[in-house]
Image (tube, helix red, strand yellow):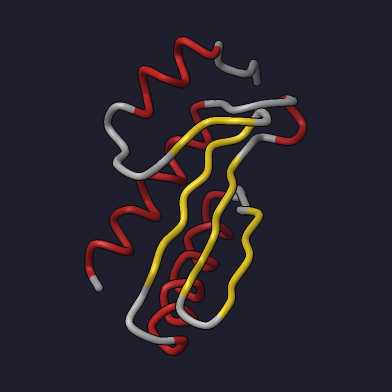
Length: 95
């Protein structure tokens, strides 16, 4: 799988509010009502990540979840990352 160019990444980001690109990954920070809601979203994301065989790097403190996506074996951002990002957005919008 070939990484996308910076121009391609930036074009894809136009359809994802709150996501940015740096250090060969796309990133977002999500805030929930409380830890329970954050953890619930993480659990739902984990099941989808496993189904897609594409796992995020993430960091959680209380109600905040920071997510970074890149395709490590491709050395950058690929279509796979944007598919996962859209899945995450779908999950979060349901909360």
